[in-house]
Length: 393
Image (cartoon, rainbow, N blue to C red; front, side, top):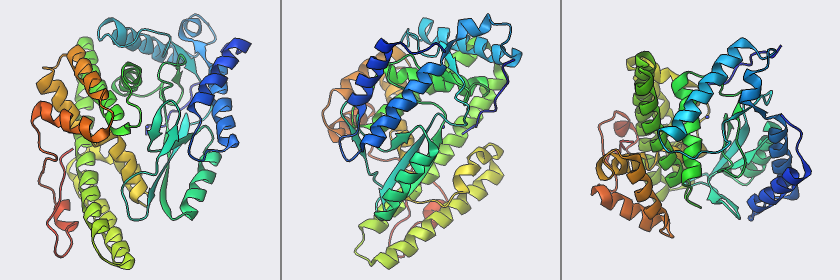
């Protein structure tokens, strides 16, 4: 009997020689160009090959009497979500998420985020195909931790995050993993929609735009899916989590803005360290205050229980920094039409540099560079001679 494996809430057939060659070529194309070792390249190839070996067609599992009944129920739901993605939303129709893989671990990969001690900008890792991204991924936690230690010895803040799903951008038929299969429907659907959106559009060397685009598609698609299912309870949970995400993005964004001011000031390193420590302390205090007002916000407790640093904020900004602008593009410029939104986003993707892309994005909705919102955090991150800062995300 197949046994049910517990998935962490937080982020088949033997491989034929020609498939191995395909994996080898793609992993070579993805290999780092700024200091990645042969060992990094080999773990990437080996990790992806293992995923391919573990994949099993969902149709086959559903027809197998030895498949666990609970797993069958979840796989049927995956099929419904996957069909809705292509048949109703027009997301890519291919073999992705028509397979299941039990990786026998709680996360699919571990991403290492790094940032200098006095900067909230990522130490990027650059690849030949996908460009520069704000993290470096590993299939084994021990490997990720070793790399994190090396980056820390160079004076960087580091954060190692377990990731429950990832996309090969359509280069392989990505499976649904055990790490996500037992999530609530809205959460499971969101990951599938998000990763398929990456296959629709991915902007090289602009993680914030790519992740923001996929997140907006995810939000729109989950809403459409739940309404089609008349899942009122699930829809309420989805809305609650959306409200919590907005709070999370707002207070972490406020902390980032406060740190920008501190790091740019002509003060001693010791003074900057004290101010940095104060901001992260007040950020945690703000979380505890807000979680009392909004019980759903407790879902972010694991994040705030860590020893927070610049790298944690880098990981958040990668997904949330451009969300307000891209939501605006969907709701105002595209009038909630997903195909129009895709066309507009594709037009923006053609810009060669981030700054031009961002200026054009904001011009679509005539938005200011930032939108301010009231927050108690704005009172505590302000330095003695600096105004309070708060970002609405």
